[in-house]
Image (cartoon, rainbow, N blue to C red; front, side, top):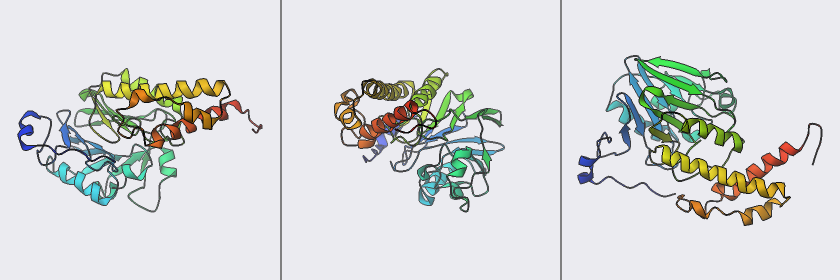
Length: 289
C-alpha cells in the first residue's frame, strides 16, 4: 500500500481546511463537521460532527491505536463526549476503535453488521440498527441522515449524509482512486447507490480510505464499476467462461487507481464476484447448475 505524503510547513498557509499542520488529515467540511483522513491506508477514514448534545463519529479505524489517534484529533476540537458512533459496515478496519473513541456511545449500524460482529466485544457491539427507512438525527441544529442503500459493497452498508453541510460519508462504497474487493454485496445496486449520491447536492465526500474527495472523484469511481459491470455482463451473456473473462478484461482507462495493475481485488476478483452474481440470477429456485 502506498503511504500518504506529509504536509510541508510552508504549505499549511495555503490549506485553510487543515486543522493542524502536524497532521494535515483533519479537514473542516462544515461549521461543526470534520473529516479525519487516516494516514494508515489499512485503517478507515472517519467523520465527526460536534454538537452541544455530544459528538457523532462515523467509523473509528482499525484498532485501539488508530482509534486513539482519531480521539486525539477530536479532543483538539472539542471536549464533548462521543455519544454516537455509526459503523458503515462490519469490516474491522471501520469499527476497531469503537471502545476507545466512544466507550459509552450508542453504536449504530445495520442488522447485517450486528449479526456479523462479535457480540461479546464492546468494540463490535451494535446497540441500534437502521432499517430500510433509515434514521434521521438532529444534533445541535444539524440534520444527519443515516440510511442503508441495499446490498452494495456488503449486504449491510450504511451511508451518512449531512445535508446542511453538503457532505457525505460513504464507508467503502467509495474509495478515492481505488476500489475495495467486493464482499457479498451486489454490483448493480452498488452503482445505483452511487448514482443516488451523485444526485444529491454534495460537495465533500469522505471515502472509506484515502484522500477527501468531491463529486468528480466519486463519479470516476462509479464509472469504473459501471465499466466493469458492462464488460463482464457482455461476456457472460455470450457464454465466455470466467477464466477467459479475467484475461479479456480491459480496465486500462483506470491506470490512475493506486493498485493498478497488481491489485487483483480491484479487477479480476471483482469481475469474478459479479460473474457469480450473474450466474445466481440465471438459476431458478430449486435448480442447480
